[in-house]
Image (spheres, rainbow, N blue to C red):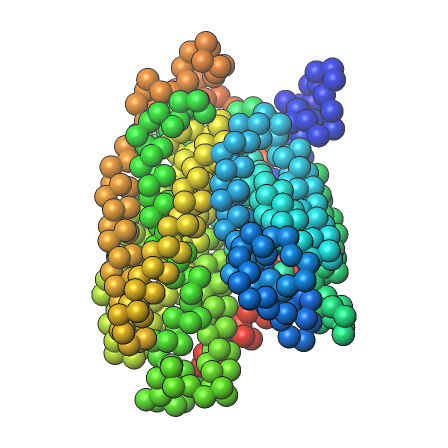
Length: 553
């Protein structure tokens, strides 16, 4: 049986070019999700960089930080004699997600043309090369080199690595779009579960009287990540044109009006109201979660105080040093549990959207988020109901991750699959802004409450209500999403679209295609090996996280 990939390839096509990655008959599509996971589990370490902040804050003093009075951020960038402050290092975290969104928007169109293999390798070079430059910056104690390496160059790798599998997975799994993107983007949330404890082990191994072991850890992680990301990139394949699983009927043929019957060009997508409505939905969903997730540990300690450690009635500000240490351990367990639900939610909600529909699923998570933030979480906080509070925030974290994982499938439904990777890249600018807004809202309200003398256990109440209001805006925006007008769909060859061959199913015309000898895929030796390669590290990370979370109970 022949396939589209068996045809003679154009002259001059290189190994990394998209044309050289078209799958042949017999290929197993279940090899693609592990390739995506291999990349996302590596770049997901961006969430775990906080493990480096405290060691780096005493990179010169080693046992105790060398503080310099009057040091500004500009001074910190170039000093070789003063230890960095944690606040100086935290800018790296901001750079990650601002550059991620910008890179995804700028190079999303190139990615669609170049294909996932080339984009994945560029992502590996940028992310891992950025870590090497950061290691040099730590070695010579130059913060600007860390910002350049991991912040700027690594951020570009984050953006390309994040969106590189999206279009490919959606095309390989048209029957399970949500599940496919959920599996991959789950890896981005899970990267820190593996990377953080691994980095801690490595730093302890390399630390000595002369150094804290961070630059060596960066080099080891960069080498390991490069191997995994390269293997994932080289494993990518794209399906032949108009490929579809054997026996599968496109949802457009079933009368689902929210599933596009044509593709919207990248240059036109942002001209539609649908793009900006979904952009707004992502913005508020992320903003309403990321700020509070970032302060999850202190928030739990401040609200519940001594109840966390069996010292009922003792307020957070009255903790002894021993109680503060014990409460911090409980807070770390809470952070781990929230991270675990963030990851699981990416797969659960995205897979659920295949049955429920993307628009309906977003309506559910936004409405549930409003109820939790406006009613249950404030009640649990004021009534000292620890289990209810923790469970509610775990649900919030799952919906935060689920929103990320479902949005690529939502875009494919609305705009078609041809340019979905690039359109997704532009949509991620909402993530960049949310990363800034979430922290500003949470930080400013918290600081204002504390300055006004509000008890710590009541500091977060206005923040909860603010987040509920934001989700209400997203709920309305989601309800306003309608099918894209036919004028935006690529119907003419002049707009760059080849007219598809059509067949009639009932009263609906659908594209003609086939499985080209590829079928639906299934269990095979290579697939089992690929899944074990990414699954075992992920299970180890889950185990470590669960062990830390036991401090809550």
